[in-house]
Length: 319
Image (cartoon, rainbow, N blue to C red; front, side, top):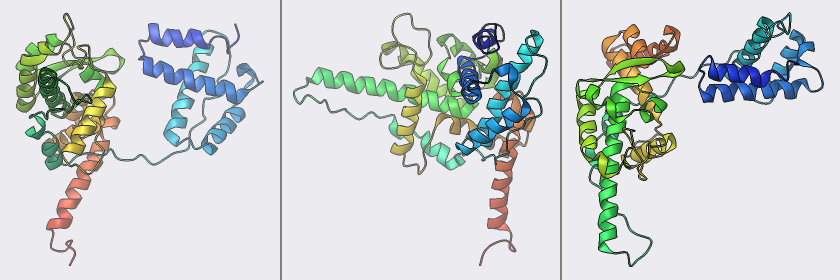
């Protein structure tokens, strides 16, 4: 088989043997399809480093940034290495080719006051929804109000856990009801990237919110549903619904920025690091494989210290 024809074989191996996530495999598939499109009539086995550098230039001219190009090169490089191990090709034209550097933006975080404002109890009291049918019965209105109360309890539990434990969106959505016993004891075990598990502490506020939700969960969950957090139809809640609910919460609480789930994870890491200064502990709680991924929060910590300095030092304050 030609290198082009072997692409599905490599992707299947990534998914089945290396246990890469569907999202990662889809990204590799897109990058290799892009390589084939750029190569055109030139077979993959005939590509040289000069070709690869030209392809990077073309993609850069299309507006792709350094991080996106680095990911594409990583996919191409990995595929050629795999072909080399199988004896299909003797050389790897991607070796030594690097993507142009691009500035790495610092993650956006909430201040502690903004986090407290977002997670305040103002939304616990549900507002009676207005039915599109003006003649809706009182029973229907009461049922809608009851469901709104359940959704409010669920959202409070989800967002408290996000901020308390620094979970990824996929990790929170995948939690099952059987993790409640661990949460009561102050920790939660989550399944992270590359199917790695880790235990993360759960704070008091989050435990209280989850206990309140768990006491009412059966009223919303479908029979036999194992998910800890469920949608209004009773099945495991979709990640997009979590994102939408968090955005609505931020707007309702008057926050001046768009809040997304990863912002709560960033805020967790930044606030813990500001208080403790323990970078290794933050790395472990976030589930980062490399300390380099966690070090970005030291820059945020320095920004915080710089603001304190500017506001407090007599030679730094503006007149």
